[in-house]
Length: 249
Length: 249
DNA sequence: TGACAGAGATTGGTAAGGCCAATTTGCTAG
DNA sequence: CTAGCAAATTGGCCTTACCAATCTCTGTCA
Image (cartoon, rainbow over all chains, first blue to last red):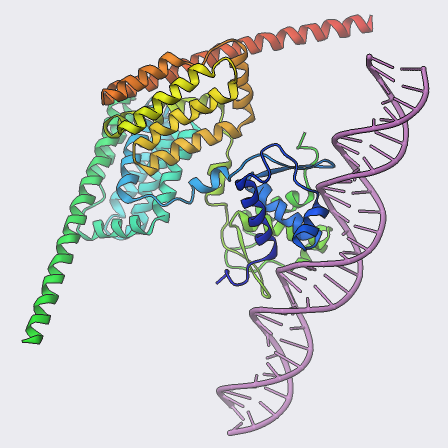
């Protein structure tokens, strides 16, 4: 692993970061000079420089040439949000709320080339449905991302992207989605078609409802799948008990 | 400015990153050694090391001690979402959509202690209004974050937090908000009161509307402020021209 | 009192060298 | 001829030492 060979600058950066978070150095304050820090931590100056660069990339400090390095944040701003693990149901609920609104905004602003792209993706989902689940899933993601892009709002785009990233990162969500597929639920072509139709008509309320309906159905399918899963687990448990009972007889 | 004093390691890191994105070095491949890169870019080895650390923190490369540095991604995965600069109006529009829904969800789930916290924050905003703008602004942020927390949905919470982080990070949004304050617009106590009232009644639709109304008014105020700002800029330009004309006469 | 110049401090970048880890290569033994 | 082991090579890691560029502050002079 990488844990045993932790690099020097990383340790220094962590110490410095915890010092900042703890309030040893407050926002706006200047850190000790590179030379001083080097002496304090008993390391060389380049190492300190590397640690400071690491903090700088985390938006914790700002270095002003010839003046010093100054604290600008007590904790990494975007770093933590991207790393949190979100449960599958939470994730879908959040998507229903956020992508629903995204869809409503998109309805007013989507252009023809984006509509064509959505139609193409829908076709892709339809044809590659049986062959390759990975491809159709990718098409699904791109479908939703095109809608986000159509809002022309980078805040919305970032939020939608964050949720999808969380989904691909979460092992729980991934295993659950494969489970759902295993129960024979086809990707929801008709629901996506309804979304596209509402977008074509520039119907904001209709588009919002179509998207919310789609994600609500996904949640329902997930609920049913977990039920099936629970049932299956119970059945196995019973079977195992029976076997054990038969063996001990 | 920071543009002219771009640090060396940043330029090298950018060149390297674009080289990776462009396919000069493919995923899994080893980069040239530190010594080689130093020669190629005509910089010293510490500088190369700093650039490599920057790439490493962006999850673009992985350095294996004693072996070399290897490409593991062609583009930063989560780093971009947190770093993008979002315009002030985009930001508020995104907040109106997302926090509106958050408010509707929160109405159904918020508990009494959270309602009390909101009331306390409202009070804080009211009393500290005249003394300290920083404090009342902080209370504003916490007000909205408590509502997000009340949804009990970490996806929503992360999205709301990301947008507020983007706001504090964006120099444009910050300067604009101070400008708005300079035009004498008080923090919107009554609008926040309306939100709290709807939440107290567990009225999801009412809460959504109250939040959307609040943020719509903020957008309007911002629009008006930018108008004033444009006017002021024009006035200054004219004054400068007049001065120059007078000087050259 | 105010503006300007210079000294001191601080970061930026470079050079060279010793050290440790991983890989590769070549030699030896079976 | 092959398998295994050891030495050499390669590569990153860290340090010391040095000079350059820049900012800040202070003292002086008008």
